[in-house]
Image (tube, rainbow over all chains, first blue to last red; front, side, top):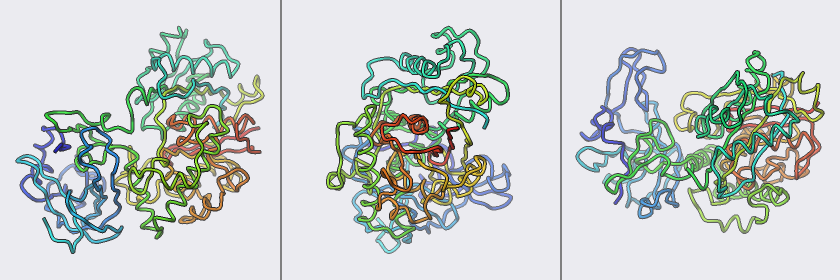
Amino acid sequence: MTVIRPAGDFLDLPYWKHLASGRLHLNRCDDCGAVRHPPGPICPKCRSFRNSWVPASGVATLNSFTEVRHPVHPLLAPKVPYIVTLVDLEEGVRIVSGIPAGHAVDLRVGMPLRCTVVKIDQHLALPYFLPAEQDQP
Amino acid sequence: MKTSIVGIGQTEFSTNSGRSELQLALEAIVAAIADAGLEINDIDGLVRYTWDSTTEAAIVNALGLPSLKYYGETEFGGVNCCGAVAQASAAIEAGLASCVVFYRSLNARSGVRFGRGERVLYEQDGNLISRQLEPPGDIYSAPFGLLVPGQHHALYMRSYMGKYGLTDEEVTEMLGAVAVAQRAYANRNPRALLRDRTLDMEQYRAGRMIYTPLRIFDLCLETDGAMALVILSRERARAFKSTSIDILAAGQYIHPGSAPMLLYAPITYSLAPSEVGEELLGNAGLSTSDIEVAMIYDATSVMVPLALEDFGFVERGEALSFLRSGGHCPGGRLPVNTHGGLLSEGYFHGLNTIAEAVRQLRGESANQIECETAFVTLRGASSMVLGRT
């Protein structure tokens, strides 16, 4: 099955290396402690360049979702339908995520979610989020 | 602003123009200058989109423009076309140029398609690879299959449904009201790609679901073509042309997480805070009740209810009742997208949205409204108030 991947050189960056090790980490300012996503060179709150990586709690709520039924690339035809989600993490940042294939879920905006990192291969793992009461894969 | 739009020009809209984007751009510019009653050699400024392939140099060389004194470039899909007009106006007011043409030219169906994943991904060993740093299709969203703008709009709509407690049926009624009304406008507009295809609510409901809750009729039309606008100082426009349309106010606005696609902004059920519209209308010396017709960037139907609320034409959460009661239709409180919009005239990235406002004020619309002031917003990222004097 086709995988949509960041180009290989990106997977050497901390965000992706932490995921490949099994846990979602977030980029945090060393000076004011604000967490940001996507990661970036400067803190958008206090404008400090000093930053490091902290593990995310994995606790989140569902901001929005859509079921994609139309494949926008020929290689994605076998993957539809699939669900894309917008997820608000308790650390105060939002990330784009989805529901792993094969999970029947009843989604509603505002519902609690928990992170589950799905390993694709040695270099790539993705942070999915499932309803908090659902069994983890 | 102390400037006016004195010429609009375009090619036909099609799904396969059969000619280069340079050729299309030149046809639109020549038509716009003729419409303005000016000479090609009067052009001393150009504004273009970085996302388009036809450069200022290509235009200068092809037309043999004797001296180009100002050229400006701008960004972000269709949502900054009012910003491009503001840029042209600023250049004129600063004395950098006197006659500025803003043009766009895109074979957006027969060439690079904005609604396809191929624009942001490449194939490698049976996988699809992203190198994009910003959405759509960036490295953080592409792996989950979030690749094209329409999918983002579906997320905005679901967020809105959660905020205001709308049911699937209510969303169907709200978005269907937009799609059906705009198709009826397009059926009377000879320029519209879908002028010959009617749409009623029953057909809308039966439409294929593309990205829930959006059906095929909620998405705009991939379109080939070119358009151009000619902008002069208001003083010079008045001196020689009776049908010049004044730019009463124009502005741009983005905030963190809102561009190129709104994904990371704090609020996802609204695209611009209320102060954007208040400042714009304040700059024009008007209020929402003075606006007689509105052109709203409708890359999807979702943008219409969101913009009506963002700009204070209806209270927040009240778009459903406005649209269900036909407030945007002929004879309604505020007719919207009277050309058929990007959904039914063609997706010309917001430039046709502006052109319809100009046509309304000139009295040349296929669906003419009695009006002296028109409002244009392109997702709140750039907006404009136009007036006839």
